[in-house]
Length: 385
Image (cartoon, rainbow, N blue to C red; front, side, top):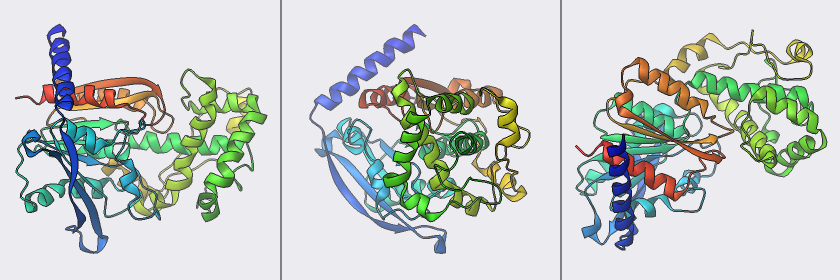
């Protein structure tokens, strides 16, 4: 363990030195390419190369972006090519000597299968551009973290992967966590999001999405500030992480509810029915759990969705090294996803290929350039042979 730590420190220092060598980043190509799914659409791509050409170390890093709501403007996915601290991901990668390529997906919304295929198709783009490369690494954040993990489990052509804040432990439990966030909010704060979300009123109204930023986000924050006892109970029952700062509560609650508002309709359409169920689930942590459990809206999942959701689950059998990076107080994709995934990997006797790096911070994918460099250094160490 001590030898690995020393090697990791040395490799991190080398990466820092590479950045100091004045390697810069340039957009080498961008465009649109077709996919092998025909009618399901095309995907945009960008390719960035380190400059000067002598900086290129021969390894390419492919990036899988996170969730993009259906109906978003074209090019929305490009806003995800930077870290929360403002660092450009292509510039960071190129500055360390790696080529960088990323793709949109031929479908917005829930697009795990499309993301896996469209990201892999970037290799065809690189070949068409006559960019010679050797090792291929894969990274992605949020939905892209799940895409990365499932790719490393199924495709040995990737030398390794770096998955950031993905729902990799249990996709079903992620669905249930977000569904619970909504039904519990409607219980403790009725009417704030309009009509209660129920099995018979499951479609999210368009106005809730259109007016989310201007009306509903402020309304949520006002409600929890005016009813602090209800907010405390809500957070206690829902287990939405807020970190060490109580003032994070507003951001945490808004972030958790965002997915219910913007992802529900597409998830139902994509999966062929409602995937969320809380039948038989006993909620705990309020001042009156009996009343809560008798009154909270109950949902039964559709059998079609239940069957299809297995395609979104990881199996834990890693073909090559995987490094994961996850904030410990993530309100959208909680850190317990990492614990669940580790258990899967252990059951598959693949723990030797897994390294998990917690980031002690609040927020979804709230990692810094330093965190990214450390994780990349560890991945390079694990894929050195």
